[in-house]
Length: 325
Ligand code: UDP
Image (cartoon, rainbow, N blue to C red; front, side, top):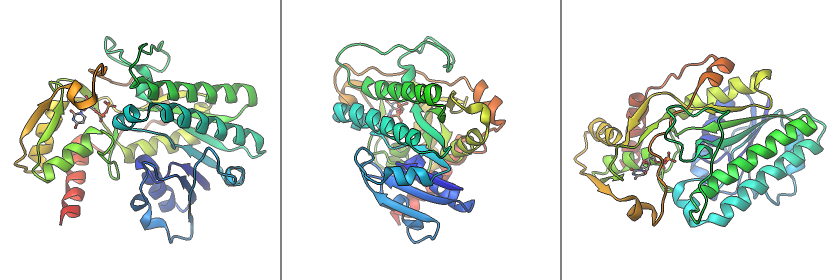
């Protein structure tokens, strides 16, 4: 199979590269290396089945050719991470929406029946923590006002609407996945993600920085399970033109996560508390809990996660310790 991965040098993308190369597929990555890192794919650069182009999906002239070659496309190229979203509110909207629309337009212009997976995010559910479970068919609310945190959410909702409209109008074979707190190798804490930050801090005996009071909850899914879900969804015709949560059900507080990371790393770090305002600036809307309804995902894939949070943390701590040596 020929697999094109936009944003393939990023966290989820690079794990997908490893997965498909190991299966014997041919993989082509395009990435502008804005948040993606060449180290994430350096193992594959000389591989016969691997090709990398450092390009901007918005303007790259050979996108048509790359799309026509592909049996499957994962669209992951996006401006991501809370810190980056707050710092670059315009490029979040412009890049994320225009990149996705261009890709859909190009897929439509080729005759080849490519399977397209579009990455969306649990951020589209906004601040709906009055709900125990977040379901794909629930109504979505974006908080109005001057808070650019929600620009990411708006951009992903626009991508979803584009994807479903192309599916409806032109019969493009597309599936939208809403990722919920995916963690694992190659994820960087630079743009805000909590698990790589805590692991980095614990291994270096730096302060483990909890934002808020640490009672907020998240459910973390290992990326190696997430990509199995993506592969199974891609192979299931019933996922066509559907929006599907990809996550796990087990929630944990950020306090528990901090203590678990400290314990597993046998770290002498102090655990500290910083207000949301100091961490993210004024008027930041925090999400207190976020748990996916996984009925649809389980019905379409019949897969249960192989990695527990404890196993993922142990693995990430070991990798971080090796980096330190
Ligand atoms: N968080 C934290 N310390 C950090 C980074 C993040 O306490 O150094 C918190 C953050 O405020 C949020 C949770 O951890 O409540 C998850 O943050 P992340 O950015 O990983 O995911 P998201 O908020 O998008 O679910």
